Structures are given as C-alpha cells and as structure tokens.
Amino acid sequence: MKKIIILALLFLTVSFDSQRQSAYDVGEWFKFRIHYGLVTAGYATLEVKEGVKNNKKVYHAIGRGYTTGMSKWFFKVEDNYESYFDKVTGKPYQYVRKIDEGGYTKDQEGFFNQDKNTILVKDYKNDTNKTFATPENIQDIVSTFYYLRNHPNVDKLKVGESIAIDMFFDDETTKFKLKFIGREDLDTDFGVVPCMIFRPLVQSGRVFKEQESLTVWISDDDNKLPLRIKASLAVGSIKADLESFKGLANPFTIKVE
Image 1 (cartoon, rainbow, N blue to C red):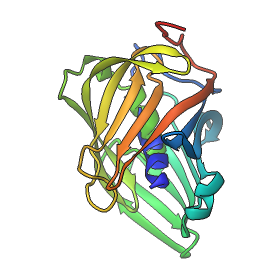
Image 2 (image 1 turned 180 degrees about the vertical axis):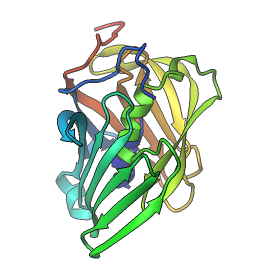
Image 3 (image 1 turned 90 degrees about the vertical axis):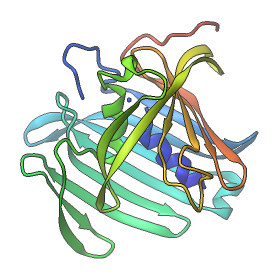
C-alpha cells in the first residue's frame, strides 16, 4: 500500500507555455511524510537538478520513496525514479526506474525517440532490450508530474473537467486523466493555503476501492505545489503530506501563518 502513495506522489501535480511563468526550476526540492493517522509509514522526495542530453542542458528530476520504522519490516520500499526532459517542450529523453517494493524489483532505463515516436526499454534485471511504438508527446511517470504542473489549461478547468495525457509505464502507454474537483483552503503545517483539488483516475481492484479513490490538494498559485494526497484503500486510508520544501520558483501563497 505504501508504494501506491509513493507512485501517486510521482504522478500528481499539473505543455510547457512560453507565455506562462514556469511552476518550477532547478533547485526545487520536496519531502513528503506518508502516514496512517499519526503513524509514519515512510517518506518520498522529489528534486529538480540540471542534466545534459544530446549536448543540451535539460531538467533532471529525481524521485525517491522509502518506508521507515516498523513499516519497513512489514513492507520494505526503496524506490528510485528519474527523468531527463527538455526545458522548453517538456518532452522526456530518458527515464530510470530502479525499485524494490516488498521484494518486487525492477531495474530499467527507457530512451525516447520523440521524432520517431518510439522508446527503447533496457531491462537490466532480465537482460532484455525492447522497442515500443508510442504516440506523440508521450511522457514518463516522473516527467508527467512536471508537465502537468505547467499545463496552460490547469487554471481554466471547470469542476468536473479533466486533463488527459499519454504516459508510458510498465511497457505500455496508458491514458492518464486528472479530474478537477474544486477549490478549498487547506490547513497545513505552513499555514492555511488556498488549494485546487484533483482526482486522478486510477484502476480499481485489489488496492483501491474505486476508480476515483485518490484525492490531491495542489496550491492555487504559480507553483502548483502538491500539499496532500489521500488514498482510500480496500481497508482504511493513507495520506501523504508535504513536510518540507525549498527552491520554489515562485512566491508561496499562505493565508494564515
């Protein structure tokens, strides 16, 4: 269950638009606490560095998730997700996925050819190389997070409307949709923050109660900062709250400190 929240943190927040202030930049860093009530189950971090691909400077985003304390004994998670994506278009060049989730492991790299609409996936665990066809403007799981934060339509959505993009994950392209629920003020450790609320459409079944079991609170300012994720599971629920951050690209809007 902890890995679902860690993955969700990498999914969630909202094409690059040269007329709009970017929601992030090199140096941005987040840390989230994943918990059942007062019990901490683990942590997840996301940071933006600068990298080089095809002889040009790109964003290098790194997401890490891990369980802690007693949760580590019941379900150990050590995840590393990375993405290299273009500073102007937001299109990814490469992703890295190296995970250990309760003994379930993956060690992969994916190399996008955005001109030919293909991706070469190197699976180091199984010693295989496979090439997959993709649609135009494909994203990986980490680049999706940053692509959506800068989406030019995110502030224009009406309640019930969605943003949909194509995302490559687990050797296939899936349609990822983010549904706008409304706005509210969220009481956080940093103060009262005006938020936009979204629900990503997830697959129901073994873990989630239904397709819309995840709820996400995003700061209603130019940062589109993820503040809280709540997941309704088959048994109980789990939350992830932003614990600390640094290097924001824009002023952080707080109503009450």
